[in-house]
Image (cartoon, rainbow, N blue to C red; front, side):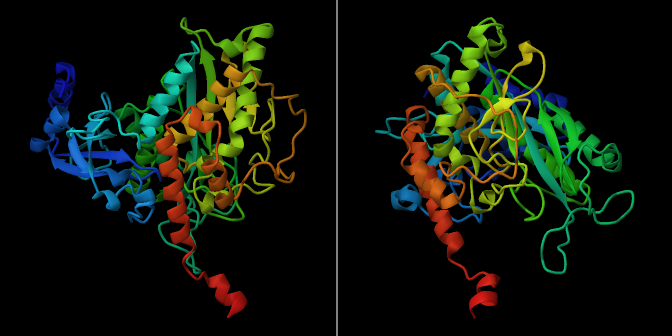
Length: 463
């Protein structure tokens, strides 16, 4: 077993010198559903994590949303429920400002254990979405380009109490004490009303080295968006998205709210999306999409062509559960076809207005509860495919209409999307095939379990 660099050993010691009152250390991996699963160590026992990692069940990567191990494809219980070894990700040790007593946290990555005969021993697990993204980035790097990315996350603040029908409800306005009922996109009044939450979330993010940026109110009561700054490390950008979600939820709980990144908590209100901004830079850091003349335009078009070609295969990743499918409905501010266009929010692949040096693609398809690593891997796989095959996206959409019918070529319903991913031809060329196969098997098992219940409507209609 290779010895880890001394600098990695010292990260924990350096942290304790800055935060000597730390009592516990939360360590966790990010699973396919967006849950953080791990352990809490007393600080006196935590240093060993930086020396040898921590053994945890490998199935933590693919438990269903209720915490059940459905043994997808016989990869857990059928194999003896094996452990993996999770190691701290350098630079991700940070305080937990909302904790009741001094606590630190660190994000982990799952590796295969050091067992005789294991061909992948000590390497990142092929079941790990973070590792899958790392592999996709390596493929894109062979083309001599680096993606510059930024993630935008929409979410709802909710009142902790359900309504009379047992449904979630928007929060009480801190100034009026009344349940929110109106949508006020980009409302400065609402930003003022929720200033304590927004400022505290920003302070907590800063304490955790999460590069949070602008905050806005979105298109439904209690809906917000917080942006992350762009950066040339797509894996780190997804780490930030994962940690921002935890930060938002922790801040909300601290102030008496519930924060939810569920794609569609309200049928008659806007869903929550995860918009990803991508440009490509060369070794000198120059934005290749921003080059004036034919070259930049051509590369941009090829990238969009690849995103169009992979959108159907990727829908089970972008809309990651049955609820996420409800977001893809005409009239809900969600693109319903693989169109692209300039300064046009109704399309899937938007080129925002701005200076040429900032030209980028805004990918507007994924729900906020999509796995960030897999969603990013699918987006970058599409771009790589478009560049390699020199695909053309056709003419940009000059007009837009969120109410147009869905494109029949795209499987917006979750079961159909899963079947399309299972038969994918392009994505497995760029994303670890075993990770994709596990994702399909885990989601199929989850869908079967989800459907194995008699809903109240069935009694209303058929009893």
